[in-house]
Length: 303
Ligand SMILES: C[S@@+](CC[C@H](N)C(=O)[O-])C[C@H]1O[C@@H](n2cnc3c(N)ncnc32)[C@H](O)[C@@H]1O
Image 1: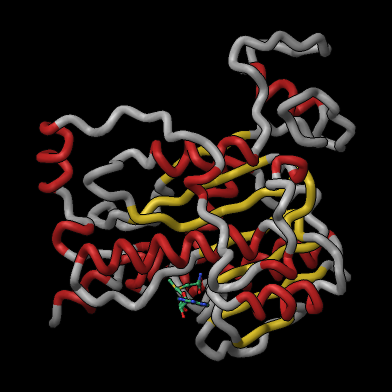
Image 2: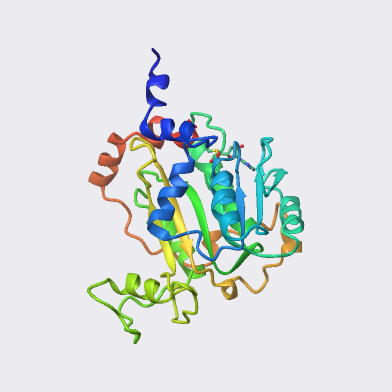
């Protein structure tokens, strides 16, 4: 029996078959939801790089039960089989013309949740793969800007690298767009028991109505986190950036959809100087022992 067939028979592979998902990736989104309560209050959603469609299946199952007329728009380079309540667009997210297709498919409405599990085709040349993925990420972020609703949530797949093993550079670049409360902020609401403050706020505002700065209407803390859900294979460099509480006002004044073109794609670097400590030599050595870019395993692809 080949190694890959053994690998594929893990618990999530079997669960994926029994629960009717198209790929075991579905569990990565479900596991992020366990921590972040992603689907509450979401009216519309977009799925970038969606094929074969397991994340879109999760969106369809979760959102349509709460709001049958929600809009879900999914896009991929590959054709994708029909899913109930999902508009599928066959396009390249790096092309500016795709933004117009997505906005039209959303009928001008914004998405409260945008997810992107995109990965470029792996060449095996690690620097090139890293570069291609960074370009895809930048395209996904640029495409998300005109689509994401104020206070919305954006999730990207990333591959951590030896030069930024904890993803601090990416977190630092995205933080200006996602409002978080100051770390030492005190809030005056009736808090119960021994709950952590965020949990207490979230419980208090479960039905909506929170207007505390840095939290969304359901009392969920804004900001940017990097997470590796338990269904993501431990040997893979894959992780996910969860960005919550979008601050639409933080867009650069000159940002206009019509001006998006191959030559005017946004560069994240222009927004804020990076604040991070670069990895120490021992961290890089440690990282080199982990399967990842260094051995060509971008196994977010494994599905
Ligand atoms: C890991 S798969 C996504 C799996 C999906 N989340 C699921 O659960 O079924 C990565 C996808 O990224 C897509 N992709 C890569 N580059 C793309 C691009 N430039 N535009 C659109 N899709 C792209 C690939 O076609 C592939 O289907």
